[in-house]
Length: 540
Ligand code: ADP
Ligand code: MG
Image (cartoon, rainbow, N blue to C red; front, side, top):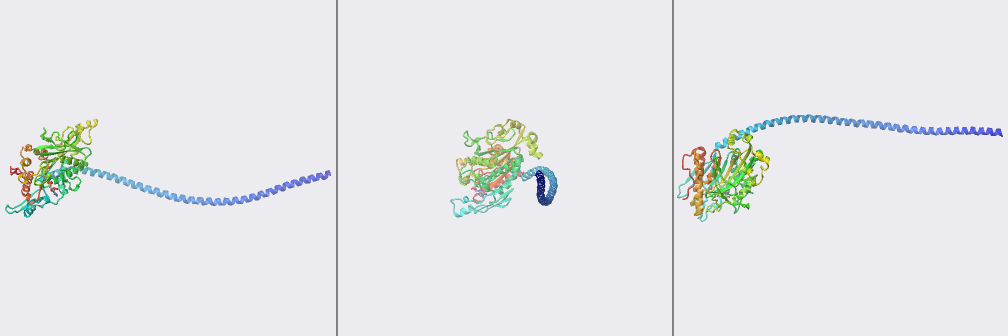
C-alpha cells in the first residue's frame, strides 16, 4: 500500500504537473489567439490610420498650396499698391509745387488786377453818371384831368435809345417840341432789374476795398424811383423797405452784401464795418441811429466839422458795428422809420430830406505788414501816409454793440502797434429835385423845398469846382456837400444815378435832372467851361 500510495502520489503529482502544463498550454493558446486577433485588429486600425494620415497630409498640402498662392497674390498686390503710392506721392509733390507756383502767379495777377481795376475806374472817370428810367406807374395818371389830358400827361416821353443814350421826345400843341438825346455811361430802360443796375455798381466796391472812398447817390424828382433804386420797394404805409424781397433789393442792401462778401475773401479780423445813418433835413444833420438812455431811437441833431487833416467828420455821430448784411439792413430799417417826410401832390411818400447811409470800413494792419493788404505800391504808400496810429473807437471804448475785439490786456498791447485805415462808402438817397411850382407846396413845405434846392445847388457847385480844378471847392456851402466831402472829389469814386420819370407830366423835371447829369458827367472830362453849374430851379 505504501508503495501503491507512493506511486499514486507520483501519479497524482505527474497528473497535476501535466494538468498544470496543460492549463499553461491552454492559457497560452488563448493569449495567442487573442494576441492574433488584437494584432490583426491593430494592423487594420494602423492601416486605416495610415491612409487617413496620408489623406490628411495630402489635404494639408493642397490647402497650404492654395494659401501660399493667396499670400503670393497679396504680396504682389501690396507691391503694386506700394508702387502706386509712390506714384501718387510724386504726383502730390508735383501738384504741390505747381500749386505754389500758381499761388505766386495769382498773387502777382492780383496786384496787376488791382492796378488795372483802378485804371479802368479812373478811365471811366472818378465821377460817372448812370440814368434809370422807371416804368410808367398807375399814379402817373393825373387825377382831375379830362380823359384826353390825362392820356397825354401819362404819355411816355423818355426812352432808352440804347444802353448809353436816353431820348426825350415830345410834341405838345402850344409848346416847342422837344427831341433831344443825352449820353451817359449807362442808361437803364424801364424793364431793367435791380440786378442789372447793381451789376454796374459792384466794381466800385472793389475799389472801396482797394482803399478808395466811394459815393453812390440817386438824383431825381420825387417819385422818379430814387428810393426804389437805392433801397428797394417800400413796405405798405411804412418808410422801411421790404428786406424779404431779395430780387427787389436796391443798391444799399446789395452793396452791403457785396462789401461783406469781399471782406470774407480777406484775412479774417483785418476789416470791420461800422454804419451810420443820417438825414439832412433843412440843412440840419440828424443822427438816425442815436439812442437815448432807454435805448429808444430818436433823431438827434449833429454837426459836421472839418478835422485838422482836412477831412469831414460828424462829432459824436453814432457808428454801429455790423458783422453781416442782415444786421446792417435791420439797423438801417430802424433808422429809416424816422425819416422826415411830407406828402406833396407828386407822391404820397415824398421824402423831403437827403438820406446818407455811410459804411466805414476800418482796416487794421500791424505796422510792419502794411503792404500786405494793398499789394500795389501806390495805394500802399498813399494809405500809409493817411494811416493813423490811434485806436479805432470800437477798441477804445468797448461799450457799443455786438462783439468786443480788443478787450484783453494782451490784445490791447497788440493793438498799440496797429495802424488803421478807414475807407468810406456813402450811399445817398437825395431829396426830390422838383420845382416848387410843380409840387404846389407853401409854408413849411416851401421852406423845405428851398433848403433842398439850395443843397442840390451846392452839390452842383462842388462838382463844377472840381471840374474846373479850382483850388477852392465850396464843400462847406451846405451840410450835404460838407458831409460828402471825402467821397466826392480827389481820388474818390462818385456814381450819380439819375432817376427819370418817363411821363410827359414830368418833362420839365426830367430835362432838369438830365441837365444836371450831363454837367456832372463833364466833370470827369474836364469839359465844363460854363461857370453856371447851378442846378435846380430855385422856385418859381
Ligand atoms: P423817389 O424816391 O424818387 O421819390 P420812389 O423810389 O419812392 O421815388 O418811387 C416811386 C414809386 O415808383 C414807388 O412806388 C416805387 O416802387 C415805384 N418805382 C420806382 N422805380 C421803379 C422801377 N424801376 N420799377 C418798378 N417800380 C418802380
Ligand atoms: Mg424817395
